[in-house]
Amino acid sequence: MMPLNLHEYEAAARERLTPTAYDYFAGGAGDEVTLRANRASFDRLALRPRVLVDVSRRSMKCDVLGADAAMPILVAPMAFQRLAHADGELAVARAAGAAHTVMVLSSLATTPMEEVVVAARPSRVWFQLYVFKDRGATRALVRRAELAGCTALVVTVDAPFLGRRERDVRNRFSLPDGVHISNLAGFGKDELPREAEGSGLAAYFEKQLDVAFTWKDLAWLRETTRLPVVVKGVLRADDARDAVAAGCQGIVVSNHGGRQLDGAVAAIDALPEVVAAVGGKVQVYLDGGIRRGTDVLKALALGANATLLGRPVLWGLAADGEDGAKRAIDLLAAELDLAMALCGCRSLAEIRRDLVVRAP
Ligand code: GLV
Image (cartoon, rainbow, N blue to C red; front, top):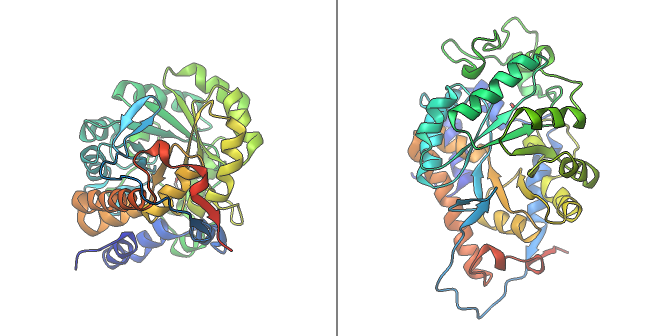
């Protein structure tokens, strides 16, 4: 049966994925408290719909970094998409392109970025950057993203080390033959160690990522590129202000889908302080726990310019390749459209703070 919503896509995907791949995508760090909190906090927010508004015309067109997207739903960066389906990142890029929305491509993609950028047309691809100890490799990766036609850099700042994801430790997570970290071939960084006691990805992070990277280094990064820099993984007002001061043009409020620091505040609960701190100087996006159109609406009401959808796109991909990924995005967009109509909102500008209240 065709999945009716994003939860059903997860069930469909689970039947198709190996347990190791499912656990890698689905899992969170530690006790998975933050993973659950991302969802639970959305459910604690109630909507205060406005009635008797003529909602015969509605638009969810959205400005992201000065360019149009058809919806305030971007595709979040996610590693190793060929673990979900043979077409991997290409299928997700085509789905994002067909939906006229941005795809954020992971540094840990399993497909060369140039091919992904072409597949995503007419939409745009933003490149998610992990900063490697090897600054030369980091710079080369940035340069390659520019040349490939990526239109922004999304620097993940919540992962100097990988969170301890016990599912991956138990499964001794690694990549199967034929699946590589494509964009890091040439730097000897395209494989996960297989001899690791626990998670091969955790071992890879420990060996490769720059744990000493600071706001000062972010300024270095900004100078090495002409692309706008978005910082992903901010949960506090002071960090948000530092991001603005460092010249970043966007902030993703995110706890990495509950995969990094377990016990971290739910993304939607951190959003208001970040929005207040940046005072409209840069765009603010949110990811973590988005499963319903009403979640997107709640995030926008609390001040996000757009949201990023992660795991559900992979569930669609695993269930039915490009069509599944596209349908997952479309389902969420249709739910948002209905939620807007039922809340008396004809445009994103009409999704205001007073639509949301903390449920008693
Ligand atoms: C990769 O970036 C992950 O969080 O698994």
